[in-house]
Image (tube, rainbow, N blue to C red; front, side, top):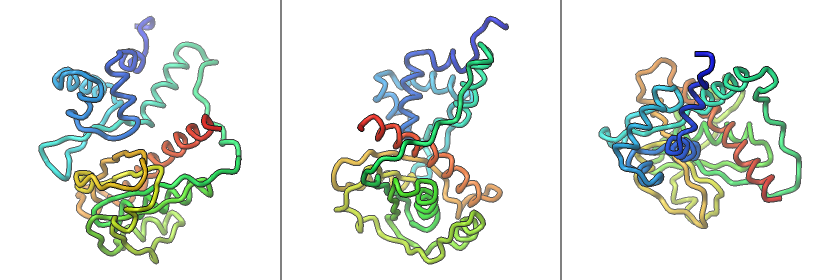
Length: 247
């Protein structure tokens, strides 16, 4: 019906679903974690997550650490697109516009550490992409719980994007145990289960990405690079917003 609000508004307007969206905007989560964070029974949490999935706002992926577990993630690109459509449905003057570049001000670069098991593809690619997209306002690093040589297909895909990671070397996460970071982001379900500790109180997040080296999907390394680029772009918006508020 023309008078019915767009689906994204009905979905996000429910208090529990809004809480779930807020939590998933920070990190991929399992249903038990989400139930605890929003203070609801797991059955009710699962019901609302199913509503968000049917609306295309939330995706799921089976954990590579424990096949019985599922990670939920918020599709920020789809959410943004649906919000844009909702605005236009109300009035042509109500539209989302691209965020303006953040104002330049002197500050210490934000430090971000990416973790995965082998530090051979996902975390190396994330480190390089954040360096490229973040410029001088961030410093990126990566490490793994069981380091392995950088995967040649990761090198090839990044080189096609104009980034050379051929000379990079894998590092064990213990190398950074005593270094302060602002953000520590795990990209691998297995390394997340280890819950490694780092100095200070970094913001912790998990991006549940499949290992492209074992994936049966077409062009898995290119898909990983695309997914990382999207997530890193939104991460930079969050970093810039936090820093602007602190000035």
